[in-house]
Length: 433
Image (tube, rainbow, N blue to C red):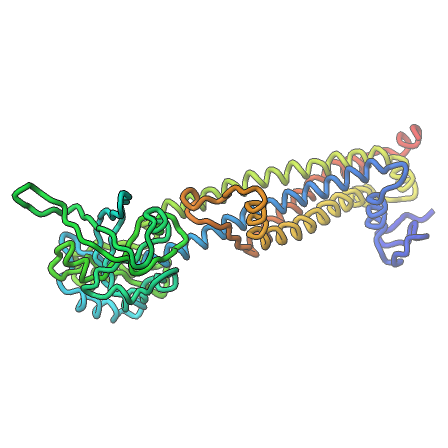
């Protein structure tokens, strides 16, 4: 009888397949279908697909959440913190207006605004809270931050010079139970000498606006006042603490600030957003790497089901293997048959996991909101997790890497069963049938 070739019509009856379909693929597809004799094996195949799919979906969702958290954290930080900062090294800037004009001559700088910053305490009734006081020029501040878009009450333009009005974060407003129009007492550490001793400097401020940055650190601990009011309060003699800047390339903010400091003759302390919050982003990158490795092991565990499935299939199909070998099927064809079956399991499981992961990642915010509403539990407390929602960002490169990893592990899992099937002797197998 002629030897079987890779492209024959063996067992094409009832299959409805093309005469040019490889019989290895056709046989692998038949072995995946449940029958009365091997239904348990097909059940294990289904479990293997679901296991790989769930592992892939979990990895996609976890990395998407961490990507979303990183992106949202960066955007919210940059909404309050400028890209780069120039401050006087040992004293405030003598003429911030002239310095600002020279800074804006650099084509890489898109905006610059002065600020005066210091520490203080705000008192309302019996409530006291420590805060960072930042004096700003409202018209220029919009060039370097998104504070104008974060207002929930009031108007940033109400912080006029001499008005002694203050914009506070929403968490601080709730803690003190204040709103627009209420008056608070601002106390700073700098004191004044009186016959009764050193008395802390204080001033009454009216709440002019309430903002929500979405980060507890700023919503609770930052307050804005007019820069001239801050200069009088901190007695800087009309000098600004420094300049806050935005640049066209946030990744190069540090190097741009260094170049500006050198061009201005030195004597500046430079800072940028990556230095101020470097621990956040380093921890996110480290956590992402660790989670990828750990969850990749979950995919590996799910792939072990493919090994057990194919081993059982090989034992169950010893007679079929022997008959194919006596008809002339090569060892390579037998190995390819079972390798295709395992690869199909991995491919279907990965496709299922990809679809499930993308759906969950895109709807995760609604899912979390539903769980919080149903349980009455705040799963994302803002004072613990910095942000109060659960953003996601699906990155195509990471999704592709996850799918390729799952497929690679699935293909690798077929090697031992496929080689085992290809090495079976037809006579020995038929003797036990």
